[in-house]
Image (cartoon, rainbow, N blue to C red):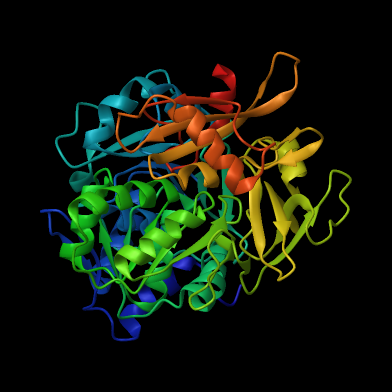
Amino acid sequence: MSNNENAAIWFVDRHVAEGRGGKTAFREAAGAKREITYGELSERSDRVAGAFARAGITREDRVACLVLDQIEYPEIFWGGLKAGVVPIPLNTLLSTDVYAAILEDSRATCLIVSAELLDTVKPAIEGNSFLRQIIIVGGTAPEGMLSYEAFFDGAEQQSAVQVGADECAFWLYSSGSTGQPKGVRHVHAALKSTVDTYGAQVLGIRESDIVYSAAKIFFAYGLGNALSFPMSVGATTVLFNGRPTPDVVASIIEIEKPTLFFGVPTLFAATIAHLEKNGVPQSNLRLCVSAGEALPEDIGVKWRELWGVDIIDGVGSTELLHIFLSNKPGDIVYGTSGVAVPGYELRCVDTDGEKVGTGEVGELLVRGASAADGYWNQRDKTRTTFEGEWTRTGDKYEIRDDGRYVYCGRTDDMFKVSGIWVSPFEVEQAIIAHPAILEAAVIAARDENGLDKPKAFVVLKSGDVEFGFEDGLKDYVKDKIGKWKYPRWIEIVDDLPKTATGKIQRFKLRETA
């Protein structure tokens, strides 16, 4: 093997050789104010690699990373790649039972966990026969565990092990919007392929950028935003280890002065409601990005009116690692998902696998170099999702005459009313355009004749509505999108069930309907 294709060399060590060793790579927001330069990250990730070797965590061992967005995260992730071990960023908002299932499924031999999350995961550790080492980031390590400082201190530097581009680098567990999460295996080359496509040709990231991603690193979207994209050009990332509430987001944008902000539709909507009440702070934003779910047109328009900055809405997946379908700066049509990111091919097919025509609805398939190597230990699902070079997304899209793609919903969310397909997303967009509505989710429910009709769950901006509000909202939707698509039932709720990445879990709503 002539060339070492270990991704950590290009993303981390290259910057020292190119003179950016003194540039801040990451800094923490909200009081902590710790930071690390590219040179320090190169050295410390070498030592993390050495610490893994010293602890007996060897090549291809899985390392579960239940870590908040903090300075240690990039050290651990890139140090893992340098060591040849396989880091698995874990969602920090899951239940104990799900952690237990993931730890058993992955057979991780090492768990690295932020002290704040230890109580949640501790019951999941009991009885696990695979874990040999548990490392605590921050705080004091309980008996039988090791603090990160003790794990790290005195370890020798170890340079990146020799790997090929197609060797497994890390896993991500899918967000579980339709059920239990699945282990998704990604190779070293996939990280740079997302940079060469979306990062360079759509986002246009620059060395001078300061990046803040409200989407966390454990999320495929957040990993690209906070790690691979900024580190591809030597930019600086602002990390925040807490919950990105609208007031916190507005404060970070004002104080830390990011030029790029990455969020999800639900957060953009909630932040708009906050700004309308409290005013818009000064910022250095040049561009914002949304993914996770399709961005409703009304949210994009309102955000631009408030900030004077566009949101480029994109679509990605854990299986493709980042965004493959997107609007782009200077070419944005709100209410659409844009066009294929350069480097990716798209097609929409019907249930027989035949390509659908313009104006028709079909399932979106994607072909691109960042596609995962498959699911861990789920052969049937791997075979149905990854069809040769093509990956099934499970999303329904319509292709407009101008070539733009319009999101219609998940494959299992679509339903017919009077023989006509209805997109839950289209009805939801119409509902949230109403000034009283913050969020909405639409599912199919059966009427007294056993026929499917739309049912809406809505979250209000404030708790009070006038008598007859539901009837007025139904008329509002009829006027916007047509009489057969309006919700026959409207249920006002305090919040909607979502994954930690902001995706609405409509299957949970269907279970209660």
